[in-house]
Length: 171
Image: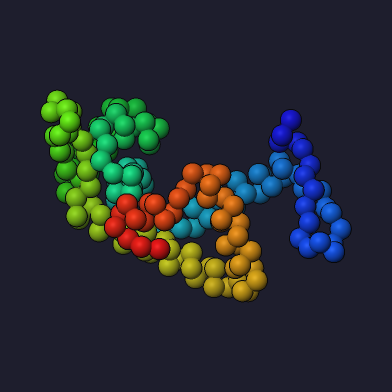
């Protein structure tokens, strides 16, 4: 079973090979990812949006317009739950309803300029907070972390360059 397999790892050719327990690495990565997100979420109340609204808005800003059903699926909630979130975002002027050009019966939800601004400011605060933490690392540690991110992105489907380009930003 893959989760219990040990892999051999070397950091330099001259060093001895050390076994790596995949389950242990996965456990540590999982725990630290949760801890990291909890720390960064401390910036979110400054947006004035609830976590659920902020998350739904994030989908619309960074992945583009969606139907209510698509947004509910992306957020892994029921359609009635998403309807309440959408109603609040509409009332706050964060999103708008747009008739789908290819299917006039369908309505798509899209972020407004105000919604984009709120989300981008929130993301900027999170990135600043994370950057402050990363500045405590040595150049070597930061380089190693950058290499780890390069490894994780394709595994997790996170193409940061694509997401930023789609949002009209550059890397």
